[in-house]
Image 1 (cartoon, rainbow, N blue to C red):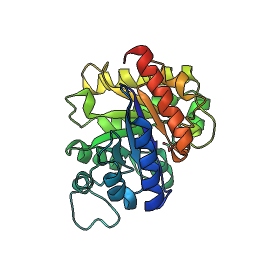
Image 2: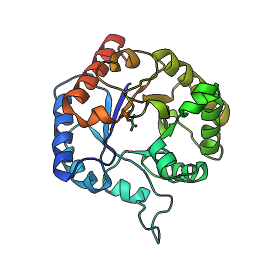
Image 3: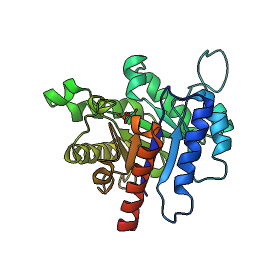
Image 4: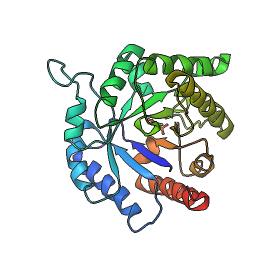
Amino acid sequence: MKYVFGNWKMNLGIRESVALARGVARSLRGKESVPEVAVFPAFTALSEVHKALSRSRVQLGAQNIGVEKSGAYTGEVSSSMLEDVGCSYALIGHSERRWKFAESDELIADRLKACLASKVTPVLCVGESVAEREDGSHEEFVTGQMKSALSDIDVSNASDLIVAYEPVWAIGTGETATVAQVVEMHTHIRSTLQSILEMNAEEFSILYGGSVNPENAYELLREREIGGVLVGGASLKIHAFQDILEAATEVITAQGA
Ligand code: PEP
């Protein structure tokens, strides 16, 4: 199984979101082997996009998830609200939340717990900034993010949790990590999952995100260690996203995955 997720960030109104979602759904129609595809619109568009995707194979995701179920938490959207609107996935700890909105490791751990207690599957985002990459502490840094998010949680199946490796220096910059860098970090993330969760981590899906585009998607997706891609900018352009979906479909067909 390969995943292709599109993070639309704070872009598109309801009408544009619905149109883009329909385009994504159309590109999977009639195909036998397709990746698991999800789009992550702004909260305001979730309901209409859900309706637009109702007869398609495209899943819906949210860009964040609240810790509490309900109450005096202005600005937050709870897991039960996301279930209600039809979300299958939620991003947690995206670097823009960590760096631009100062979301702490503790808050991210609480969001993850709330998500795991719901029917929404968490996509835990981790990744180092350019400073850690340059001084060689990137693996240690990602281990720290994973330990604080995962130390106190219960995961019984590998399908309960997706990890997305998104190096901050590659997000929205046009600079993609090399395949070798991604594979090396994914291998590290997998062994960290194994030691923190004390379970076989072979089956976990680890996605890569950071300036994925139609030119680099195939070489990333064909790696067995790379379970899929989390796409930002290129997921807003229907032709670019369709090309990435096409690359994933080719890999699936070639590998029988
Ligand atoms: C993202 O926002 O998760 C992302 C990977 O963005 P981009 O593809 O634009 O680098």
